[in-house]
Image (cartoon, rainbow over all chains, first blue to last red; front, side):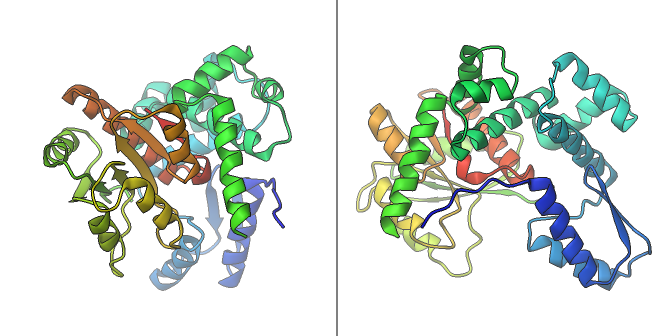
Length: 187
Length: 148
């Protein structure tokens, strides 16, 4: 039997963090935007233990200040993209400045230097990624996905999808369906 | 993570292509560690070394003697420690159907080998940057399909 599932990444992450932190009997609060406050100073050994536990889930403690800020930028952007509210691109910069208390010039230069991509491209990539998720979930039609992700038209959506992936949304859908058939025929 | 090199493996039977490929990577800004193998049999032997650090991206030529790219791809997908490796098909032109078939069999990227050096550099840089995003931004690798 094959089941297709939908999941809330944020909630999964929170649960994993809780489980790992409880295991070490720590007092903490999870602050969102990838920030975690621990009420005591951890010994090297404990920090290492925590890190090892996190790593098995692909979670990693960010060490230097620049990476911390980049992680925050990503979190703010992702929250925005996954919030289903309208995302006027002109507002993105204001939003980041407001949330992070740095000038937009600083934020965008730092982001490009660390991630090898611009904030604008990151947003496009993530929106297309979200579209892929919705396509593979199979609950919505392509037109509905366009609506949900606030694209002005299906043509604009298809074009952007093609620009980012080199494939049309329909070809993508077809490939994923065929892959599933292969997996199913093996079981 | 920042200082970790991106591990690249190229399987291609053409020596000139292997040299050009390495030269192109030397000029792009993401730091890479490149290894090459000359055919499909060598590729599978290389990948089956037990202490091997799995490459971040495998560039796979389709037309190779002894064992072709598609057969290698299918074999890799059966092996647990290899099945999540990002595979970029790196080949001279093929039909639409063949291209789609490589995706269905589990390739993530399809690259038409560019004929000039500048385009090659641009394409390889783009692939490495997008792969970087998949590694560092919690993107779902099952949905990683890219055609350049």
